[in-house]
Image (cartoon, rainbow, N blue to C red; front, side):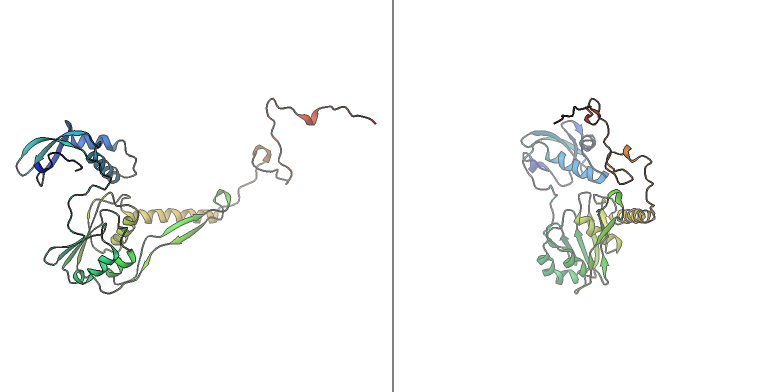
Length: 292
């Protein structure tokens, strides 16, 4: 928690019961009501972050309880300024949690660090990959090859290329990742930890994990719930639109094209001007003709 005073009095397992007399659950719900988000897990992730950050410099009365002792107590704590994401204490970036069981934090690990640890990971009995965050320092084409034994691909991205009106002759630019296996292979049992704050690149990676069953998935859904299934539903919608577009017949012409101020006359003539209230029609005025 982003607090300073009395932090030494907290114990492992303490739970926040109330903040300034407001029950913790109600406080989260109040914050969630002010957050824009398409999924419940993203709104919860953002609301927890906001509640824990509070207002820098302000103080709050925090009520704690510990299930182990059924004891409830109150502490006066101050919020501190911190722009970094709030995380609970974590092991080292790559660590052996117990003999044969290794942990890899994909949010912090670099490609070079992962490659250097392959010897230990290939000899492991189990590996926990922590995807809570954004694996910006790790290349997917350096990571996944050591988890697979056949070619895998990511979800397909179809970017529309619009060069005609009314989505006529709509074309798409298709792209995705094609990843080939490489040695050494990590054959250990694998588990992936994720949560509602995993977005974008992390979601694409978790989509590959889910689709090809590269390990057990532990924790909440990513920001866009179940990325592989969502991508498949989106793909079906896009393919359906393309098929309907291919079958579309030209729209019939309007009987009176002058009713459409943005379209020229059906006979190819000049665009007919629409009368404007109060405007002067000079074409109908009688003008004197000067004679020599």
